[in-house]
Image 1 (cartoon, rainbow, N blue to C red):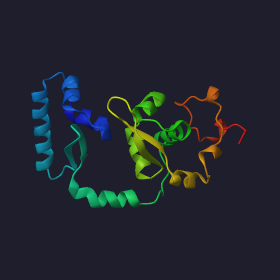
Image 2: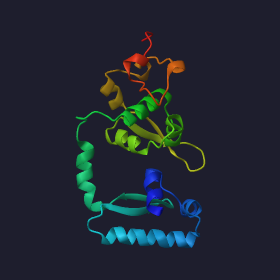
Image 3: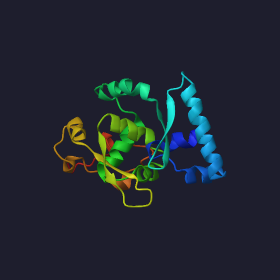
Image 4: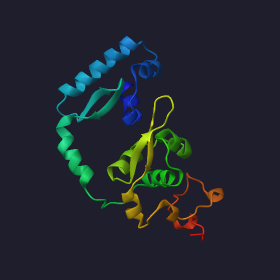
Amino acid sequence: MLEVLLFVAGEEGLTIRDLSSLMSISPQATQQQIDKLKEKYENDEKSALTIIETASRYRLTSKDIFKELLQHYAKTPINQSLSKAALEVLSIIAYKQPLTRIEVDNIRGVNSQGAITTLLTFDLIKVIGKKEVIGSPNLYATTEFFLDYLGINSLEELPQVDESKLDIEEVSLFDEGNLTEDI
């Protein structure tokens, strides 16, 4: 249960209090489970995962020995198409920025962490700050590379979207059929 919670929390991570509450166990028992899982990862040479603690939040992440490989991966050019989920998230961020992952999730109705990670890796979006609410979640916005990727000079050049016809579960904002003629 701990492992799946940390996985789903992604880069946001979870505090002992959050984990304890979600698993309905004491903070001490939660800490013991974290320590046990962390030790399991460290002793398993076949596992690429570890648990880190930063700012009193626990995160599931890759082991340091994979740092060079992941840096190389992050620098590879976009020579593959983005998934439907990544395009949906990119569309939402492009038209409604800045916003948090939770705000994107609420629009889509599903967790967007994987798509956001992909878009960050490809430098299509970036963290531009923290929202001033409890938990201080990251605020995401598009990058200059995003503009280059689309071949436009500013966000004002994005095609106009008729939001009354938009059903985010069925279409992507970048589908030609959703664009109005007011470009």
